[in-house]
Image (cartoon, rainbow, N blue to C red; front, side, top):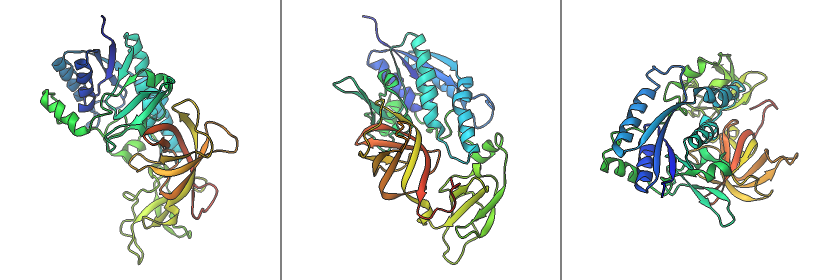
Length: 375
């Protein structure tokens, strides 16, 4: 009987390498696919494409699979990076990994895998897929919650999930490392990547400045006092502490400064002192551009949990539909105030371990709003 072909997205890292080995051991016809999605400074110290490709080839040779390289740089620039720059230009803080997964890793990559004769694709993400009795595909958190990546995958749809395998979803990261060492993978001790999707780890402000102009403006406190100058609203995110430039400027409280709000119309960055300042706390948010794993949103009034940033515990909340009743827009009201809810980031909903989907945060209601143009 002909083996089922699965194409594995291989990045050169340990997770995708162990994924390929596990599927080979399970009897699949495994083909590795290395995606090249960034070309602007491919030879810089921050872009590891060349070394990553060497690692992929070395792993493929060790475990005995074919591997191919494919260039999706044009698709990445049009579908992901252009939106990334538009969001930053608008003073928002996007999450490129979310869009990259939906548009590149599980769309362009999936389409290419089908052309290679694959029935399914696989990646080294820490998440799970489960099919219900009625044929619905659910996206579940990984069993290793410290590594769970369902937040970044919440925009996947039924078609994408039906063709996807996540072999690491039931495994702790420690076991993945142990397998890599035991079978002698050349990248067993390679450091996990933490940079922007496909762009790598680099000084972010310098990188962003290559594509967006600086537009200096005042830094003000909630009472309107000017305490400094920012270099451009695009270069700051709400809740940011480091890099504001006010480290030595403290009042009698001695509390550190945080970016708290942006007035886009006046090009003003509002800063506050103290981690728990009211301007950093929100009970309610509104999101747009929603995507629902099951194809439709939960009923209005549903009690669920949500994350407004990746490294955050689930927070109890109530789901509501916005006044226009659009499936693409929704509101969340939290039992406890959430810290530094940031426009441009994703609000992702959960029912226990099941990821329901989510949307892009448009605005959050802070305790003491200043002007309507605050972002």
